Length: 238
Image 1 (cartoon, one colour):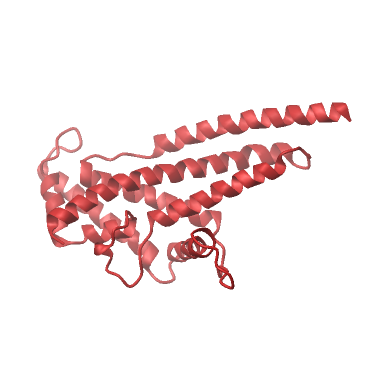
Image 2 (tube, one colour):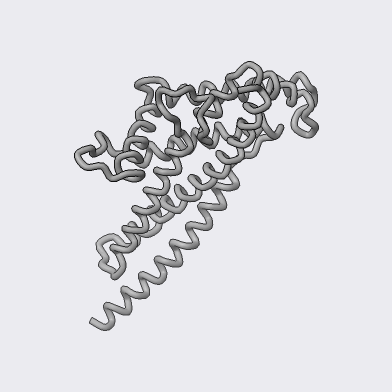
C-alpha cells in the first residue's frame, strides 16, 4: 500500500471513528441516566411495563457492546494495515507506517492559527499525538493488560451472542459495564488525537457527553413522571 492510499484511509477511518465514538457516548449516557433516575425512585414499587423497560435496557447494552467491539475491531492473524475495518487498531497500524507519519508531520507544519504558533511546534504536536495512539493501542493488545482482557470479553460476547448465536459455545466470561465504559474513555482520547493529526485541531468530546447526558435525563425524568402517575392511578382504583 502506498503512502497516498494509507493517508486517505487514516482520514476516512478517523471520520468514521468520530461518529462511532459519539454513538457510544450517547448509548452510555442514556443507560447511565436511566440507572441514576429510575431504580432509586421505583425501588420495591410494582408498575406495569417493567418488563418492557428491562428489554429497552438490554437492547441499549447490546447495541453498546456492538459499538465498542466495532471501535476496536480487527481480524487476528492478518496484517492490521491491510484490513478494511474502520477501527482504532487499524488506524494505529497505518499511522505506524514511516511514510504516513512523515506525510502528516509535513501537513502539520502548515497548520494555521489559532492552534499553535510555529511550524516546529505543530510538527511536534502531531508526532506526540501519533505516539499517544500507538501507546493507547498497546493497552488493548498487550497480553494480560486490563483493557486487553476487557476487549477480549466484549469480542467473545459479540461473536458468540450478538453477531451469531452459537450452541455449545457460550462466552467464557460476560463483559462488564466497566469494560465498555473504560474502552469508550480510551476511544475518546484516541479519536481526539486522531482528529488533531488529520484536521489540525482537537475536538473534545466533553460537550457531546454533557449534551447526551442532559438529553437522556429529560427522557427518563419524563418517563418516571408518567410511571409514578400510573402507579397512583392504579392504587386509587384498587
